[in-house]
Every structure is written in C-alpha cells, then in structure tokens.
Amino acid sequence: RDVGMSQIYKFEAKLSQEAADQSLFRDVYRMCNRLDFCRLLSFYYGGIGHYFSNVLTIFTVYVVVYLMTILAIYDLEKIGQRLITPMGTIQMLLGGLGL
Image 1 (cartoon, rainbow, N blue to C red):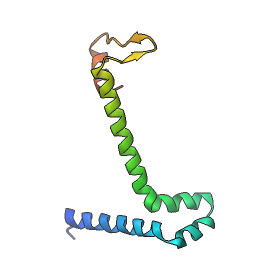
Image 2: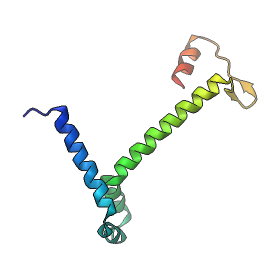
Image 3: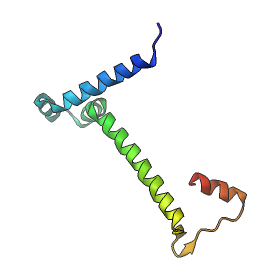
Image 4: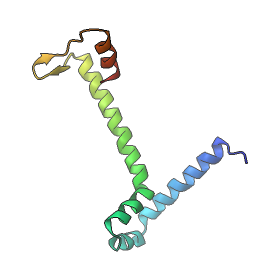
C-alpha cells in the first residue's frame, strides 16, 4: 500500500485536532481526577502534552541559538572574568559546534 506525504499530513492533522478537542471537554477533568500519576502522565503525553512538549523544545532551541548569537556578536563570551580564547584547531571546531 502506497502512503504519500499528503496522507501522512492528513493523519497528523486528524490526531492533533482530536487532541485539541479532547482538552476542551469537562469529562477529561473528571477522568484525570481519578487517574494515578503514571497513567495521568501517559494520558497527558498521549493527548495535548505531546504537542506542548514539542513547542517548548523548539522554543528553547531558538532561545539558546539567539542568545549564543548575541553573545558572539557583542564579544561577551567569557567564563567568570576570563574571555574564551580558543587555542588550536580542535577547540575552534568544537566552539563552532557550540560544545
């Protein structure tokens, strides 16, 4: 069976729409009050929590990249009061990777 990208997109859209609808109902609140902690985490991540976690991860990556760029532009990269001065090719490569 051939599965194209449009079918995958429609499936993902259907899942996200159902997760959004599910988070709006009062039954979810009643059900979550009766679940233990492990099942509550599974229920959260199986619904809207998956999308919320993805948004937080991507937002965090953007913030880190922008902050590192700002520090590099204004020469504020230092440890304590010492400026970071690479001493060799390997340190230059690792510094370029952000390590």
